[in-house]
Amino acid sequence: MRLAFLGTPDFAVKSLAELVSAGHEIVCVYSQPPRPRGRGQALKPSPVHAFAETLGLEVRTPASMKSPEEIEAFKALDLDAAVVVAFGQILVKEVLEAPRLGCFNVHASLLPRWRGAAPIQRAIMAGDPVTGVQVMRMSEGLDEGPVLLSETVRIDALDTAATLSERLALVGAQLLPRALAAIERGGAAGAPQSEEGVTYAKKIKAEEARIDWTRPAVAIDRHIRGLSPFPGAWFEGPGGVRIKALLSRLEDGEGAPGTTLDDRLLIACGEGAVRLLTVQREGKGAQNADVFLNGYPIPAGVQLG
Image (tube, rainbow, N blue to C red; front, side, top):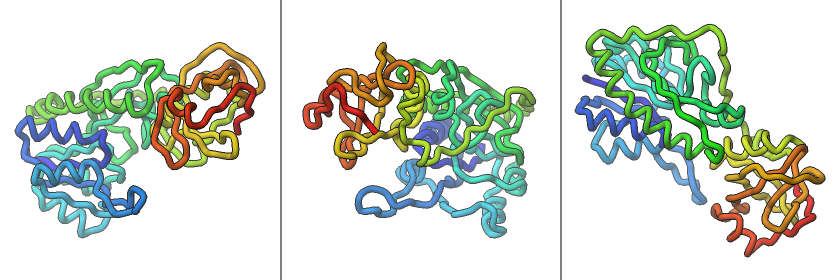
């Protein structure tokens, strides 16, 4: 099929690779514009942009797909279909209707639960036991189109947004060739989403990241894992040093919320306790807790902020 691929983060790279491997003609790749990254804040292309260039594919990075010029340029591609995977922009009706067979989205949840920008993070933070990947026909509404294919994925006790995203990306990439084959045969009308159980996965905001130790340990553990590695749930250590908690697990323990219960980062919460397993001191790389404590010991009885 003659396709355009619209995607931006690492999550979308596997899907693009799978489409190329399956022999589809990728006429053009769309991705978000390069952003300043790293200490030097140099402009760097998105993961999809960088990967597409290694394959010699044409890449376009419009700030918006809503301008008349961009819409006409998209129409001129004369596509059979377009595949959208975590692109990061809302597509207007004219764009959605431009390809002969339509536009199709790989979404990382079991719709209608977790429509929107951050379904993987929100599923972990809410304590969902399972999530999944679905391929849907796109409509003007936010993630409201009929579902063509679906696969359920379990959320494990130590899953972070990063580890779960990796598994879901692979599942989504594997679903795509099957979905496109059905679309090409004309047998992919899709099943309408239920009108019950709709939830929205709002974009993660920086102000959500600070850990509130007065919450129950179960909620704090999910918060830590759901925001790992980015933006990273954080707290203040001795001396006001900001420390990100990137992996945790539930353990028995009680005490004043935010107090260390031993010298290995067992921390009391409003109810129960969490053990921090991976942490990152401000300006440093992520470290196993034992290695971290060798250079920055935090003994029992310390009140964390």
